[in-house]
Structure formats: structure tokens, C-alpha cells
Length: 166
Image 1 (cartoon, helix red, strand yellow):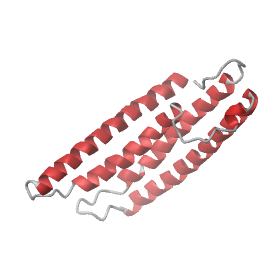
Image 2: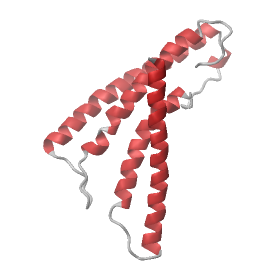
Image 3: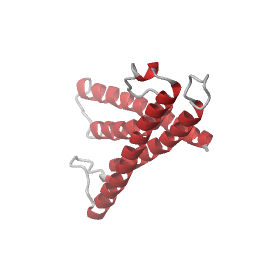
């Protein structure tokens, strides 16, 4: 199960990286169209924002898996292994709770948007649910990865000579 979660997380992180690459291409295209040909697009800003939202939420779980989230561990890193395990587990539980709440409320927002037909107030009028659904999907992935990391944390610290978290 851990391998499936890690593989899924890695797939979506790579997809997010490609989305950021595409955003760069769209911005370059827009600059050329606007300043060289004096013909700006009506879609570049909205598509870039759409991709940025999706890429950010899809990459979050991978960032947790790689243990690249911002952490202040000056004090905790000097504590005994059991105390480190406790504080790391506690932080993962807090992230899991927050992710669960974000999923629940994100789904409610998506359902409301679909029901009332909410759309962006741009010329493209993209249905709002298309960006809003990134929240429950992204936080759902983060929740799964969080549970996997919690499992790893508990078992990694169970062995006294282990210093890595994976």
C-alpha cells in the first residue's frame, strides 16, 4: 500500500512539474504575442492560473513525502528518538486533520458550484468547479501520503539506530 501511495504521489508531482513548464511556455507566448505582435490573448492568464492551482495542490503530497515542508526542528532534533517520534507524529496528525477538513469542505464547495453553475468572471467563463476540485483531490493525496509517512515515522523510530524517515 505504501508503494502505491508513493507511486501515485510521484506521478502527480511529475504532472505538476509539467504543468509549471507549460505555464512558462504560455507566459513566453503571451509576452511575444503582446509585445512583438501587439495581439494579446484572452486565454493565457486564466489557463496559467488554472494550471498553477492544479500543480500546487497536486505537488503537496510529494513535498511531504520528500520531507521538504517547512519545519523548525532545532530543539526537536536534539531530543531522544522517542520524543522526535512523538513530535513528528503529532505534526503529521495535525496535517492529516487539516487535510481531512479541507477535503470535506472542498467537496461541499465543488457541489455548490456545480448546482448553481458558478463560473469565472472572465471572457472564458470557465466553470468554477474545474479549479475548486483541485482542493479535495490535492488534499486527499496529501492525506494519503500523510498516513503513509505517519506509518513510516512510527516504524522508523521504533528502531534505535535509524536516522532516516523513509
